[in-house]
Image 1 (cartoon, each protein chain N blue to C red):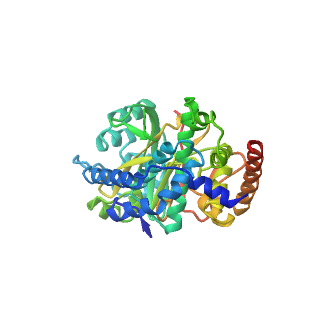
Image 2: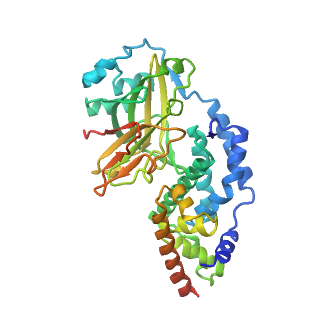
Image 3: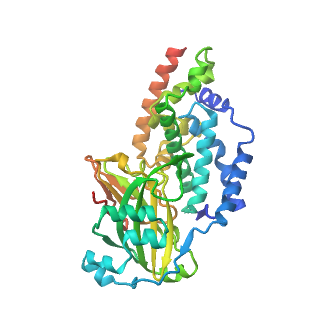
Amino acid sequence: MVSAHNGTEETICRLVETYSDMLLRLAATRLSSTADAEDAVQEVFLYLLERGTSFRDAEHEKAWLIRATLHRASDFRKRAEARNLPLEDAALSATPPDDAQALLGAVRALPEKYGAAVYLHYYEGYTMKEIGKLLGLPAATVGTRLKRGRERLKQMLEVND
Amino acid sequence: MDEKRFKKAFDALSFSPDFRSRTEALLRERAAGKENTVTFKRSKRTILATAACLAALAASVSAAVYWLSPSQAARELFDEPGVAEAFEKQGDTAVQPARIGEYEVVFEGAVSGENLTRHAMQLNGEIVSESSYMVFAVSGGSIAELNKTHSATPTTLGLSITPLVKGHAPWELNAWTLGGGYTAVGQGDTVYFLFETSSLEQFAPEEVCYAVYACEGMGVPSTAEFSMAEDGTITLNDGVDGAIFTVEQP
């Protein structure tokens, strides 16, 4: 049993040290502002501690954090879009994007369900089966999302190139 | 897909170098604040008739007379007169009892409204003025003992609670994504929960319901517990001990 209960020093350090990097990058698949991604991940950690809970195991904990981060990042993005807030992409559009920016922009332009699968596979190295467990999806669905996400990324990057 | 190119792009992201230290400090601060906050209140009022009444519970919804009404619970236990008034304004609705494991769970009702509580609810860092509230009572098992130690919470009871909306997958729309939270008050062998989320009225006219189910750990809704039919109807999977309570439209 993995516990996130009580917000102990040990728990706080473990959560932040173990998951920060992955969750920040994951949030960045939906948010063009790294500051927004940081806010979203902080809220997920806060929410987890305030709920005072425990998980079956480390995988269960990780899956919860991944899903919660994706939801929070989506919420941030929807709010920004609803208010027509300028996105970082727009600010950068005045200068030709370098390769990294072009790829990040393309990932963010993917439908959300594709972006998460693509990131978890190509950056974190998870298999379709593992991603299915993390996202609560059948492995076949993950495979479809990966395939379609890959195709769309290729199209977008070819246009940019 | 060129994995190296993909990794290089994400590695190029520049996050604040002090993110970890800032976040750890924030979590410590919040944890300290939480320790100083009484989240489990115990009513000093005379205990009303909350004795176990399983037979009455099984018999009919008239079992409600053995529990505090949702407006009573909101006013007398949770000290939330705004929520109590909303329940009173809504009028009586039938309570819905269910047996989940060793517990008798009674869904007493739900209301939505603006600025009903004395505290401000936050979702994604923003103040949420329109919220939904649900009151339910749980008795049985070791609740009487747990109440003595102020530790009866959904987690200690091994229960998970979440609102669900027809047509929205439970693993995508649930208590966690709606900013859910609760306050618990133990009274004798019963524990009352006032459960709060951002307003469910935003999903009208879709059918809204609440699921309470036995789980280990946090119990974030997943395909392990729920299924959604093509018409959007949500059901608990076979083998999952729980109940889905439909919210009556006033």
